[in-house]
Image 1 (cartoon, rainbow, N blue to C red):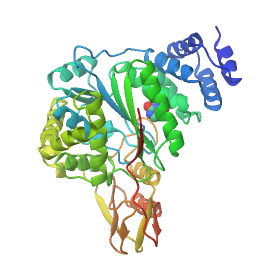
Image 2: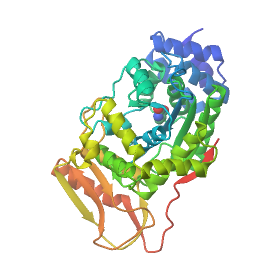
Image 3: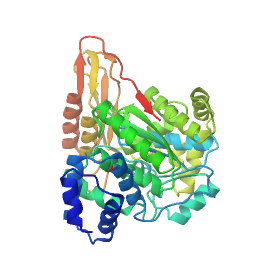
Image 4: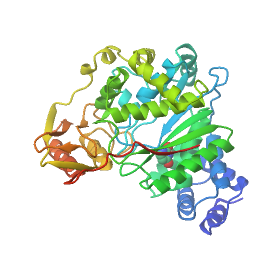
Length: 434
Ligand code: URA
């Protein structure tokens, strides 16, 4: 078999066999197939697509390209959640302790920010000392002893995806449904997940901007899970405006802590309860959604989810005094509240613009490995549909540099669009794919 023949076959729109996909991914992983061949192949996939069978084979080949984790013996059912990426999405920080407080053992490997979308690891590192680099042995021991782990990817899981993702990022081949679906699912399968909730974001601040594309991605990932002997449910959730109010690492940790204390923004709390409820059903802890939501909500009200988060931070070396007193979290030197320039109803709060502006403030990276500033970001004060009077606080910028602050004020003001007429609030969810 030759790599070039496989590229030509895909270029000509033909279906690749299991053997061809396995050969290509194995060769790419061990370096015998070059980056330029993989890039040409990825472009052929982007232009011509893949059948369901090809997408599944690609996922499994990437999942098996390195180590895989077997959690049987440590947990009864390995649970996982994955968000396709959004702005202000701090859901994992709340959902994982809620599940633990409901009696589930949860070990999750999270990622860093990608472009304008934030990452759980970056947020957690706002807490001094918090370790995101647990070894495989530490991961398994903590899962067994503490019942809750939240760390970066351990060991050499799905290395083919790591290599291919880096190539796609710089060759215009990110936006491909089979490549996104196989990238996400290969990591979940390699990490040993048996029951998965996929939070598929749709809207201005998501990879999938149309509901049709988000639904197709959700259906593909749920089908792959089934073919791989796993069970997944996908929630199609709104990402037109930021989730909650806070965007930026420490600001989001603070908002997650408010929510774990029984407060927090209504939309974010609702979102977390829905995700947690679906996980409780997949975990067979509850059998209907209203009961599962109630059980999850109770852990926010009675402090048990907060207590689990505290135990998690302590287990991973973080300073728990930051959990007890969130005002200690990193603070930006420049904080400016921006008033509404006019009266009216908010018709758009453009999530992607706000996410990109947060990256410019230093909350995210321009390139891999760049340092980030945990203190910077935004707190938006409203939701689409709100009626706002001129002069009322519209959003607050947290910055470390006066020029960046001015640029952020202008960009985020322009991200707020107005209407003279009442505007319907945005839904939180657009549907579920089972
Ligand atoms: N997240 C991933 O892990 N991979 C993609 O391709 C897109 C989002």
